[in-house]
Length: 115
Length: 112
Image (cartoon, rainbow over all chains, first blue to last red; front, top):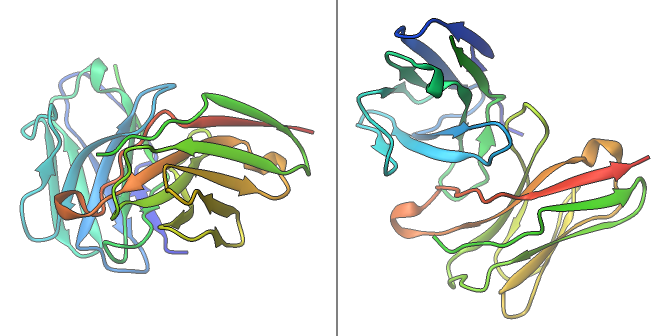
């Protein structure tokens, strides 16, 4: 199956700093990628839809100025958590699909810990 | 988005079949039924999907009720590596095309 990678896999940062997470589709092009957040023992919650060459679409309740998304190419989307705080500590997961109607392939996730 | 209902947890023994149920009574005619699973500390993994007919692939089978208000994911011979959270998701069309809304899923425990 198709492969989606994320970098870094784990990051620890101080409160107030910004953290960038990369999501790459390694063997296919993706005009759309999705970003999810998962708190311990909870399900995945969709944060935003990342669209190549245009603005991301954010889900209700997700602050677009805090979670900056850039989808500069057909294989790369980045999520920047700005001015991170301990409550932003979570497991961030991206996904992409070779076509909108096909199955989605998920990255391995990024564990963010804000001290 | 139409909602799905799954049992919180199920248990199975290794090498036995597992039937994971999912209710989706408000499914619309254009909704596809998708199943994903997630192992601890990993991203979800696609398992199978279908629309109306039963589907088989190398991982599992999907049995869809005739009225499409329920479906069952079938793992024919459970292994320890099948222990995961299984999510039944309806993927619709229109403006939400491609988006997946995850519920709480079913935690599957496989005993040796």
